[in-house]
Image (tube, rainbow, N blue to C red):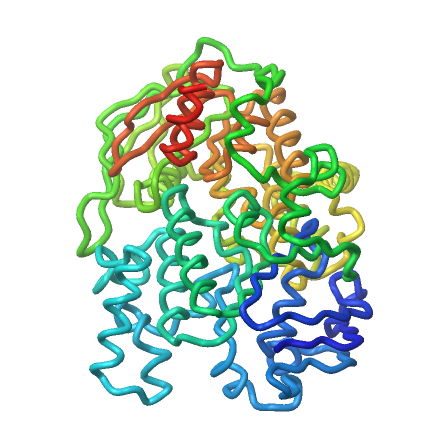
Length: 499
């Protein structure tokens, strides 16, 4: 059904590091194909080849043939390819055309000229399949990152294409939403759809993949059957830079030897309340005490108020009346702005300069070229220092933003999903930077749906639910079990207890 013959591609004005080299691949009708590999290996570029965004949207030097049902995707108009291939991008904001969720779900069907009755039936069916009913009629701008991703999946599913291309679809989803995504992919598979998925989080896909393609530096290095891939030992996965296949295996993982410099000192928060226009309160914290100089993982379902909490703590939300006390000092919103640095969920909002090197330099109060180079090297970014930040892959952009946080030297640093789009190797590099920042006396808050990151780098967990703090606990053996119990399917927890 899909055939790629001797595909070579380099992005315009790039060094070729993020391109593709002699790609030959056939994908059968009804096959679920998983693309994996380290950040920047070419997974996203390969998805753009299949859905026609290359060469119609992303320009560069392309050779070879891309055939879908016998049609050369590089030669036909993009709208013709869109009728065959539905895409869910790594950043869902980039594919929205409406300001409310229901209109977004209907948008593609309306462009196809479908009758209103059919469109409404599809919206109702998709809302049920993906549990979107509570999100219907909502403002796109009031949704969390994970909720936006669910709407993006729903809008594509409503088109009922024969081929689905998903680029890091779980990157912003909570545990329950990831299980729902797995169920949706299972449904598409049962309907005979062809599904190509570029992912780093493999635990929800290994049972569904018919074939796994491992990429490195723009080339296909290895191809596995789904069964053979599922039997790879952890040592082999680690060598390939891939995440765990079963989250349940983390129950047996040793406790991190991360020695935090956290003391008995605490940060005190008062009156952190906030709500967005035409929405119920999304944050409601009367008072709380948080460990100072620790790495605190903030967990909770999509829409629980995690990002709102971080924005209020940083002083971004001017209408939040919150006050932060640190060793008797009182910090209002403007004061917190000067003492906090936040790595946003969508890092495209905070990349401004013409090169990666300059991006770090402007984050420093006093520019230090040697320190910039040291930070870049610690995050495996030194070879990219002269490239434009917007030319990088999603995972590489994420690492640049984290590098800027390190360079800022501010005492309180917040990370919103810092490992979305990152492979195992670069996740551990991010964790190492958390350790270094902790040793420097920084207090860090990490919003994440990534239990591997939490085990590798965090010292405490703050659990938010419906805008309120449910619990704060250290990551000792008991806390580790409680944290993993939040992320893993309850049936697996029952089986674990039985053992």
